Image (cartoon, rainbow, N blue to C red; front, side, top):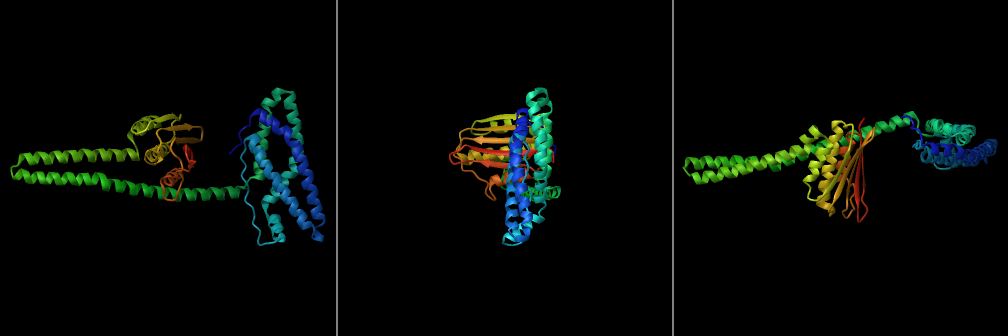
Length: 371
């Protein structure tokens, strides 16, 4: 994914302030490395080289944080080769054979001369504001891509991590679908099916009474069958609405969530800004998460008000449900929030819960619109 351009002032600050740090790191790491190589035959070089690589790792970790803070570039820590056994020699051997070590060493070697060029560009940006406005952010973006290629995980590691994430997402999606199937089956069996059985029994008894010429009893039994039929229709309607409400398909998330919250026993403030309209799976997942979370809020949180906020940028729909209850909610295995996380994972989304004791509780889902 291409790196976005950082804000102008942060980019200029990064270009100017990075040079002293890189100068110190370059001299300290290179001198320690050369001393370690020169004394390797005397064995003292091994601990010196370990110190050099430790300094190098610390500097590269700082560079990742610095790039994230100033340029807005999130650089993940690369996978490290574990030592084959205990002892200083095994640690050094693992670092020597670790590709990340050599990538970081290459970055240290180019960071200082690159820092000189960037420092000059930063000074020119201060002296000539048009240069800073138009050129400095582009230099910062290029530096972010360069740092990511040297200091981040390699392409193979990224693909492996992505493959594992998709594998886990698929497994959680299968579990979520199976849980949903069992819920629908249970609701049908315990609700509408029982009502319809009662309707059939009432009509059967009414038929017997009709043969006995007892119009009063027939009228009562038909009335009971009619009431049960209406309840069955209502339960089927609620079940269908829980799966995919028609208003969601016809009018989108704003109308669907407004209709949902209007039926809640506590006041719920709704704010929906999702233009352009997200794909149907994202809308369905959003509706399900909001519906289940608000149901949990009314049953377990002790809250007397809640809010729902749904926003969208180019790549993600963000759902936030907040309540003023007593807090303490967590994602326990097999619990309701874990089920919501599984539901979000079916479209590669992530659900997080912040619920300190005493509240408030915030349930947030980040749902990608492309996957």
